[in-house]
Image: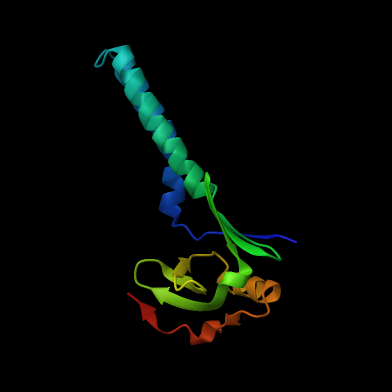
Length: 147
């Protein structure tokens, strides 16, 4: 069974991801309509900016964490990272200055990974249920800050 968890994004990030392509379309449409820019130039610039905005929207709105019986998948738009649960040694809830409440994973090969699930406690419960070997720290213990 695979469980999905949303990432915590600020509201402004979500609004920008949805609104940016629309605003760019309106801006370049008005530049063409009022003759301030040749249509070919405006169309080329608009296409590049709208493509970048759509990729940004894909990253923001298409990001999630998936916990299955064998792996944790981190999905950011077109990029997927699969981490076998056997490689995850510990999960610790922390609070950082730049990201707020996070989950820090300690991996077998000496790396640490900070994740920002929207529902941190459910995410930790799911990790613990799918990986009984995992050392999961309680949220109440999350008083230390990571800089």
